[in-house]
Image: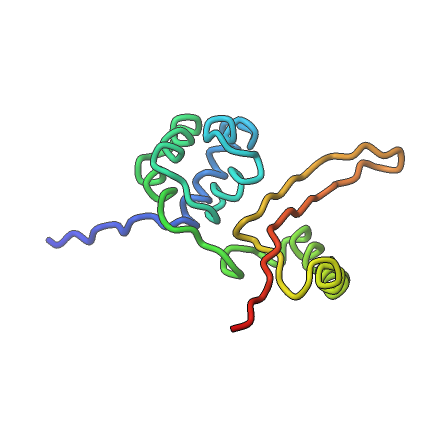
Length: 154
């Protein structure tokens, strides 16, 4: 009888395991961020598979969420980024895409006018999400803070 080994988990499977454990144990992202020692936004991104976790960080999350060792190890694999990592049919993601479609050219033009020809980096980047009370219904304030990288001529 031959036994086919089970392939190791990938980052997307690890992310699903994190989400399931988080829900099962009613753990908030803030508690996971505290265990990892990073911001809530970065930690959430990392546990969804889009940032690199050290073995120590993955182990800390594994302890909080009581994750199998295979999941903890998968959390340290290279990140998955780009279109493959995002469900663009999710209503919130779709609306953020709509924001870029409506205001992307405006943001690009204003950045170019203020800084010159270049881009806003997603590598040297910080994200902040804040609840803003409003009598007409609470609002979401999203701050995208990226380093400006000028294009270079050679």
